[in-house]
Amino acid sequence: MRKIILALAGLGLALTSASPAWSAKPSAKAAPAATGSKRAKPAPARPAETPPLPVSPDAERVAAWIAASADNGGLPYAIVDKKSASLLLFDAGGKPLGHVPVLLGIALGDDASPGIGTKNLSEIGPAEKTTPAGRFLARFGVAAGNQRVLWVDYANSVALHPIPRPGKPRERRRERMLSPTGTDNRITFGCINVPLAFYTGTISPLFRRKGGYVYVTPDEKPLEDVFPRIRIQSFGSPG
Image (cartoon, rainbow, N blue to C red; front, side, top):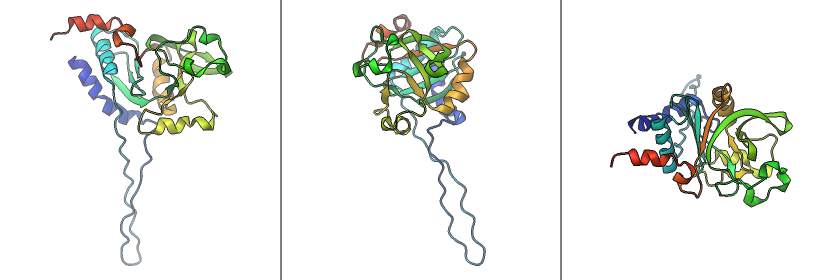
């Protein structure tokens, strides 16, 4: 448990080094004008502080379980925290590499609709646009339009990728990702959208060779129903 507490605490440092794409632009305040012919130079820009993203109790429990059991099998892994609409990324040894906002399926729910992977996007109804919960072995592959994505649940066409381009302006995906809360981050057909810079600079190099695991926490189901092995950890914990 001490190990995962230290790991989660290190996420603040990872945020700085990862240079997340949603960080606010730095602003500068001009220094008072000096008397005489010379003008005072403006004060150097100071980066605006970004409030830390929340982490749900479900995501904390999953992170503790993975750290205690080495469930990731020596591969990098990500925890998609649906309740906070964010993603926590770790390397193969459990070192935190970043915590970023994500966009998720429009509908609340933890299961993919039967046969959804064979449907065209136009055939998918609003209630079917869920991001399924569970433990997935994710690997890169090709999607429609010859786009390379990180497949999370290939059978149900759920992938992890940046916001599609050009996209639909009315969906306001970029604005939703930049918003300070996760309440408006439900907009996709079920895929997991992440910031472009974080995807290309951190996730892609990390998962490129052998893939890794993606753990998606539930919206509604009990955590133990989605990750039954957590029960073993709970029984073994003192107190």
